Length: 284
Image (cartoon, rainbow, N blue to C red; front, side, top):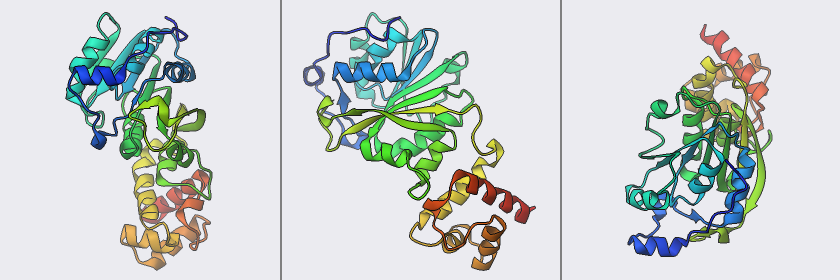
């Protein structure tokens, strides 16, 4: 298996015309076709020969073909049923790709991934499912070793942000792993070209989340409440989100040694950990 292989490029507009298809804006369909970028994505994933790769959003199979050359096995998931016949045509003769049609947010992948060692995830994902997708991938029974995601540039910047500019999306990723940008993708590498450039984002997963796994549901409840009204202070945002009196929230924050006047984006993960411990103390 070879991650540096060069394949004949696919003519994406012609493929779509032959199958009578148009990209769906509602699904965020911008098909990546530049062979140099496709090779860079595979290189960024550092795929061991024995790896199983889960590809989310196989699209027209442009990246799937390269992944199949590098990995022992590829499980490619595509939501849009219209693309399945085209994908079968593009991937004909490739014997290590399992093609699944369905919604990654609800599909049970355990039968296909149970023996994956290691498991890597490669995905060209639309912005609107980024946070939900990452949580779905990282809270499953089969955890990947790393993710390599193609996301809009500003989304990558948000995910990699430091305390002071954190978002719920950034916390959703950073509690599980270390994100870093590893390459830029110009809009012209896609068909049709999006309005903004994209980034190849690599997330190396920690052996365990940075907060206790059993506390993550409470953590996300608190974080969602805090970020739901991010212009408000933590005292007022948490009071509104949790349905608690502001005085009770103030007591919680002071027990966690956090100034109630601060805002959610300024809290580090260590401070979120203190907030969780204070929450348990109050509840228990």
